[in-house]
Length: 125
Length: 125
Image (tube, rainbow over all chains, first blue to last red; front, side, top):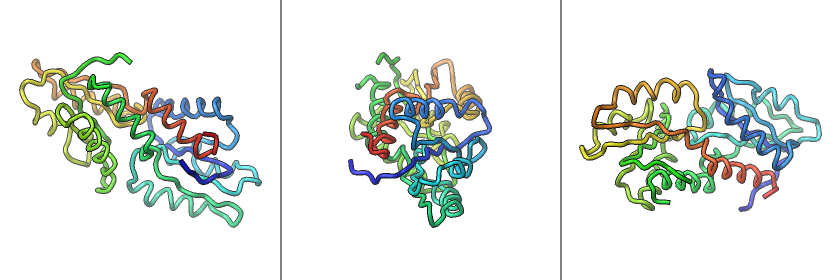
């Protein structure tokens, strides 16, 4: 798979009023940080849970020029079509480009994994 | 992986006011139906998008006794802790057991796939 390269990736989850909700995202982030190093990767939430995308962008060092936001979402709805692009628009500067990637659930690898999980529940895997 | 077996699996997505949002879920469902057959699998939405869980359960044939609801969610929040169990409670009968499975995003296979996607974006895969 050919991917563009970025200085920093922000994993962006939705956020929830439920404090326990964020646990699997934190855990995924920890696993990623352990496997690939925490440098260059952050976790942020679109709303209701901190840190926000704004917090994370504000904390980047000045050598970071190209950021990708990878939504931990299954599908593109109003949030990824309007709200997040609007947030990104206000956070971009001449020195900092922020790109919004397709949602992780739309990735072929993740879809294949979801299919396998369903198949195993059906006793067909 | 050892999984309990069910007569029918309902893939349950959140639902959205955005009509385009459901497309990846419908597409995942189509792929699953093509690969494993549509028999024994349905797709439903918790809110805002149809069909609802209630619609799908009402359409099951009478030989279906054990249903599993597999949430197409990343994490357990209020919806999976309260709203969906309450829906299930009202839909269960003496003839029909409905079990709520953990969210698909919490499955090790899906987490590994998400890690691979992140790694590839970081140029480390």
